[in-house]
Length: 77
Image 1 (tube, rainbow, N blue to C red):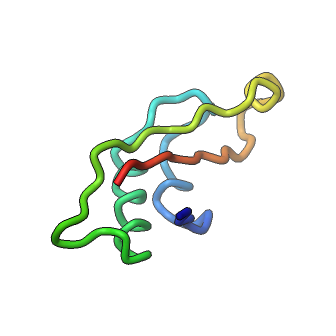
Image 2: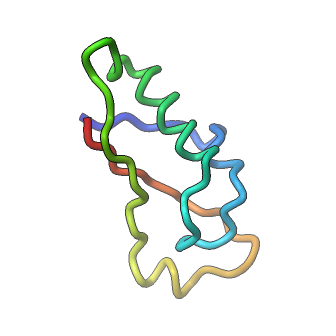
C-alpha cells in the first residue's frame, strides 16, 4: 500500500536544498504523520525503516538551486 502526503507537509518545507541531501528530522516527522493519518500505525504496527528513495540521475543532474525537490520515502512496517 502506498500512502502519500500533499506537498504542503513538513517534508515539503524542510531544509533540503538538493535532491541528495540527507533526510531531516522534520521529514521523518512528516512521514510518521502521513502513516498515522492513513491508519497504518497502531498498537501492534510500527515502522522499523524509513529512508529516502534516491532520485534518478537525470533529476540530480538537472537540479539547480531554488528548484522544488520531490522527496519520497520508502517505509517498512
